[in-house]
Image (cartoon, rainbow, N blue to C red; front, top):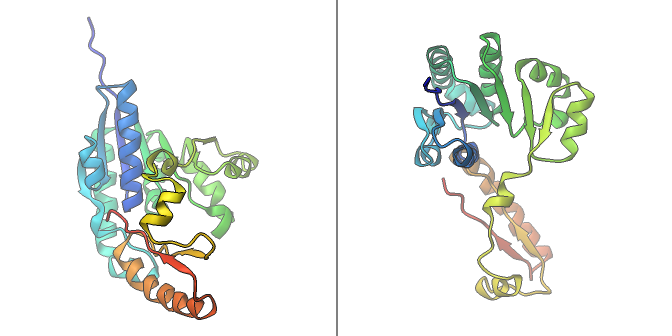
Amino acid sequence: MTQIKPLTIFFSAGESSGDQHAASMFMELKKYQPNIKGIGMGGLKMEQAGIDICYDSSAIGVIGGVEVIKHYAEIRRALTAMQRLLLTERPDLLVCVDYKEFNFKLARFAKHNGIKVLFYVSPQVWAWRPGRVKEYGAAIDMMAVIFPFEVAYYEAEKVPVRYVGHPSVDKVHPEHSKEEDFKVFGLGKAKPIIGILPGSRRNEIERMLPVMLAAAHKLQNSFPDAHFLLPQADS
């Protein structure tokens, strides 16, 4: 009997959130294809899920033009390494998870070399660079979006698209009821609650958190009864 070769999925995740999303996707895929093989670029979550990490993305998860320039050499090395690995492994599918500029280049390279490409957590081109939507469409085989309204946008541009839901919905499971949370965190039900969300990457926290805290201080002058909550990312 001819033995069927297990599917090989190549993942590219350059950020902490992408690392988590890719890990969750792979674990779900393993329920249907236990012998599936996962390789690629990512972090600890992907490794724990059973994906063979060929390039650690922790050094290139940066944001902003200045940080990209500072880490350009490392980013370029990562891209070159991933391109070479794609040609060596010839996976059945490349899954690009967010990390738009890097993954756009990688997706275009893969598509040019006959490798199927799924872009998971689509780049928000509808908000920042709508002119690039056709370029993304030419570089992929399917766009998996996490917001319902994105479907119509990509369909209008003739980009293959599927709505898959937001990954955080399956991950966030409240430990307490709303009433219990008010007690745990010492919150007043009649008082404003303001969330401070600086991100998960160290450089973006260093840049954005001081500004957010300064804004929170000013808000507190206007709303002295307000509660401020700052969640901590796994990274």
